[in-house]
Image 1 (tube, helix red, strand yellow):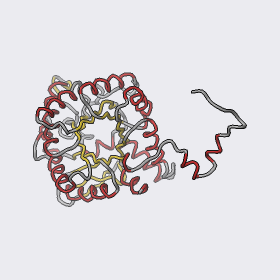
Image 2: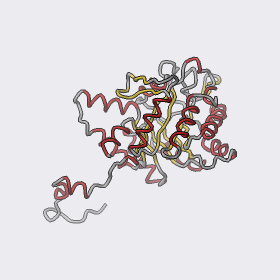
Image 3: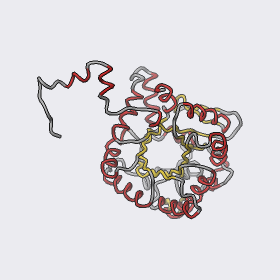
Image 4: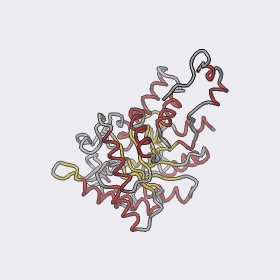
Length: 330
């Protein structure tokens, strides 16, 4: 970039001299429209259960979930993302609970859609890790995650979620080719308005631990997910993944985690001009939250972290701070 002007005629600090002028020249701002609220749902009646590794975050029974969604609507948050806490007795090697039409997510979506209609969107996770007895996102065959067997089940899961009323299906499994197959299956069922948010760029990250606590997969996970999630040392690979998913029919791409991968978000935006969601994951949330509670960093770090994701190119951010921040911004 060519710099026009020079000191002393040009003094950059003039535009920083007071709050009013800083607001006028601000390049990026945050609103409730930028926020997606992730929620954990569990079986039971009028239950609210804390998650030890995620301060102030809870699992909710469906009735209590409705109250939280009502708050989100009032704060103009446009989208919620649902994740199930599945009881151990409902998990098996093939994750068959994922395509049970009476499973927790299906029941929650039906009730929420009936109550809130189109006042707020619902995004459902398409993956098997909450449902498998081994904690992986796919079917294990010959001691490996079998890509194509897994896709067959993901298709059933995605179509079922859409039939129940889910607005966006979000495959987070990282199987090759699943976006195209899910899109074809949705269209065949005349579910052409159902959007796909592809977790096109999901790294095998060390920041997921609290989330796995929240959905009950951490204690049962055998091994790691490095054979299907991306190596965090790679960046060009992310562009290839995004290109493939766009070709297969995704509407929006997700980058997960968020803040450690700002360069990836920017590269995707610069190369593809496609809407991007970023996921400020559980580990990011808990580190910031604990840092604030211990006085290591200030409360303003929350907004700073979210703005950094917007600045990099995110259209919207999945964040556990969504309710808190939307309330602050109103």
